[in-house]
Length: 251
Image: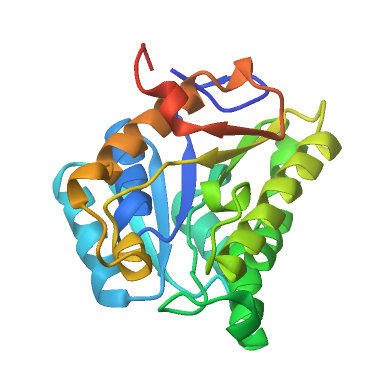
């Protein structure tokens, strides 16, 4: 049984919405949620990649639906929320995983186009807030729910050339803290999770020469995040945590 805030909720009777679900960490979170019995709606921009993941989850006996959309498009959140409700029902778990680096290759802030910073903020901060507003309101009415935000160590460490991404993730972190304080006592929780460095396409785009052997597999991190969700009642709402803290123990 996983605790998704408010009271115990069996995943087999619950619905989850995962953005950035066509690959990497989002794909693995969706797969593991479906394997636990959740009905999962996955959001991604690439229809082909998204369809592959949805078909694979269904072939394994899970319930999954794809929603082709860009969370950075201000017109998208209403369509995403409506489609998710129609496909999987009232969303009890919202995972904000979709993200963008901004400029690739990475560059110093003084050489960063303001449009690249705007894109990072739209996808990494504003888009998640728009979707949270639409999904968390009904959660409050039902008295239960969990919003999980995926962040990065770039939100707390000043890495050269990571300005647009790091600033957007820092904003996401603090937005999570504020939402947690504002939702206190409603049965709806917010947690922001730093997954650690993973072997993903985004990491390869950012650091092409990184040694893959030093990076975590997204499936391993997804397992840690599910373990974290299983112990969510131990955390104050609005907490920022590292997935590495949930590397072992019962889920």
